[in-house]
Length: 409
Ligand SMILES: [Zn+2]
Image (cartoon, rainbow, N blue to C red; front, side, top):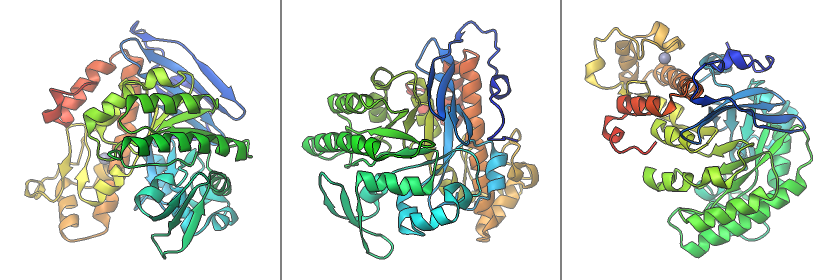
């Protein structure tokens, strides 16, 4: 079982003493205060790398996937299930916690770690993405955003300084700058304005930040415009922050368009610092992004799809309402150590979904979170063994046969 406070132990987490000459053993260390990022393996054939991201609440083996606890809870899953899944870092949404129960209440409860009963690393987003996707926007100007709460319509103002203050009250290990997130198909001048404003807001967030036990990441915007992406990266890298995120993707632009943006990431951001691709979680997208040097991912898909009877496996997805599972006594995945696969058959899971029992969504969420942790561990092992490209092709063929032929990993 993962102990987020355990001492750094390179050999315990991936086969880093692999003799495979294709895996270059090179340590690129970035360290600032309570945070550090060390690359323990780099692929020679791509930008894929295995790293150790150290935070005040423990070490994260990268590439890593963060399950999403939207309202301070990963839906349907207890903290014991998250620990058992092998997940090392989780995410909470500032927008939701700002509106309910409020950052002061979270702080009174001991911060987001206590709220979520999780003493491992946590990342909070700034709320920007949800403001632009969920709330009714009132105004965006140089100072910040004014919006109406989607819960009760109350007017809320979020400035860069307020976004940092809220996240300091929440107390996560990694906090995100406030950014402007225009639709990917917005006019070029709108996206260019968002790039300029987001960079200015990143500077203000960095200036407003006061806690030494939190790392601030800046966010690249720029839509699908290569020059705007480059300008955005250049502006935020100048701030010399401990990590950088790629924002504004997985918003309907499609896999190939996402790849075109990610192709430039390795040259745009320092290799010594973690790179986080926000909101991306389909296995095929993760493989393509890892190939291009991404270290951190988050997505609601494991739990959202789990609630909808969709199970991820290394052999491809299973839809548990399908009649083919009716009398099937086998587990979702023979090799999976999760509670669901140890105790429940595919036939039993199908019954739970057809009967509308709440246990069905819970069990599939547990399995899916475990799948993503195992998937990332397998990716790290493959990079360390110098076999990532061939393993990625194999996984794509198994998980998504239609895409395997044209996937650009
Ligand atoms: Zn399982």
